[in-house]
Length: 315
Image 1: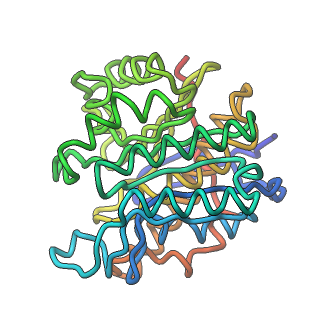
Image 2 (image 1 turned 45 degrees about the horizontal axis):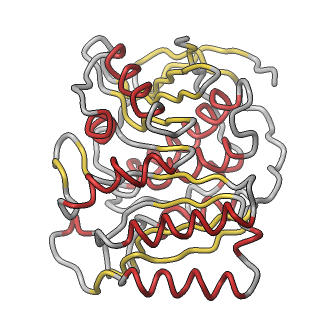
């Protein structure tokens, strides 16, 4: 795909930005998304489902928790959903013939430690019926500022059992370091950690937040890597916390990348498309002064973002 390059200055920082091309509608996929649900706000499936649908995909959500709001508020109503109930829902879907039609399984926040078995069983059932299906694991554990905010058993399960079964994983830098078992701060360390995680089983990795001391001030980066190469992209850093942004990022990248999983250039294109959409969503939310993502208001950003940030190939 050809881009027409132009320079743009955003938040006082100059970027080489290709003008966003008119993107063809992707081939519709059936995505089974096993994540949390909140009634108020946008995290987990409440963040991931609508952008995927807006891109033209069929999404079948299965919930791991049913909460009033995300836990960042400090108080919430509702409860985790038992793994047996998750499995019962998936088994009933299989009886309807739905699992054979699944193209992608996407998992996020797990709630309880026993959910891992339900997810792995689901992935195995889907792949037995459709060998071309892929599994994306968003290994939700925590972040550098808050530390680990899930059941202490979950990170171990993710590293030892779930991530090795995934085709694509989408950790933030904190989660990447835990999965790889190493310190991650420089770009070289980030790439080494990516390689370590890919050696566990996944064929592709998206690092949703790269912080390094030599990055240009006022920017934040994302990195995507697969067996064909690695790419880095930078956008202006918006000074606010946006719960659910990682969930949307994982969903969008999964949708764009899974169309051409593993093909040369697909990671770069998926990274650029995802970054463009996420920057506009976050910019929309920041401008509105909202605590919750402006997911609906920014919906055109998923299909036709105005600017694409050019990714730089690292290897």
